[in-house]
Image (cartoon, rainbow, N blue to C red; front, side, top):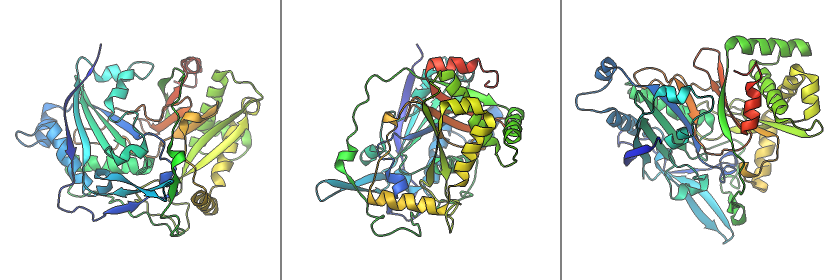
Length: 440
């Protein structure tokens, strides 16, 4: 049986030079609504560098693990909150307020090895091997546990012919944009940069913030999470869509609706949704929901900085009858997604923000209704630009955090214009989807 062997663990702290001076960072409604969820987990698979690449990247008597630690420490100079802890303060006995204390306790770094496991053993199987979940630290840790757990934990696992860099970050600190902003910055330092190309904007200040929204207290009863029993068996499978196949889906969707404004992503998601529903064998009279995170950095007026480091995502929800999705075709479903996205702007975001401040409500993936699918990540994130000094990654994978029937993780594919979708569904649904010739 293949097993992970932990070689060492340590805390990585920012170096003294150039560290951004932030001691306390308050959390917004977009952050706090994630308190009950588990850490965000993404990781990259690399081939091992050649001997020549090692010589050009490493100084004498410096190992790759030393190099990872040093470059991570330098990166934390610009992301000091990742080396801090979540602070909790009791309010009037029945509520708790939270903020990020940049106290420089440090991020967790784990060096591990796994014998007799190759890069091909990760890439080639039809379903994502369960061992991949062991490549990530802090499995099962929830965001409110950040009061005693690291806010960032990295595990570098050595394979026979490769590395896997698994990263777990407290979701209160990052959305997908910020997660990959940090990862991209770490890769820059690893390959020799003296400074990050895009310094993060750490202040959580919005122009419609109020004193009340900066001092939100959560009722303690909301922080009690019931243990989920009878969890159904789930598998993950990666479906690859080529640039050509995506272009065909876009053309078909626009032709069916006699328009030109349905995007490639909207057509692809509509196709995926229809494929899952068809494979689920769901009653035509039931409702199904697809939730798409909409980045709002540029949708606000005035817009947030592109380098805003935190959660800046608005839930875009489309709920449709199963029968209509299957009968009306690809274009109709894509058009419904298109209209939902187009309707989300500054006022909708502002209203959601202000309503949440008045009545905080925490998200729970554990209690989602059936036929509810949530998109995670984005193909716009620069995943394959994470060159740590010896070439681009060969694959991206997710950890087991926030695992549920209907979790859909999307990212750019290795080839330009392609897209990979990692679907977490029942084995029966995934098997039925494999019979769909358009999902490969």
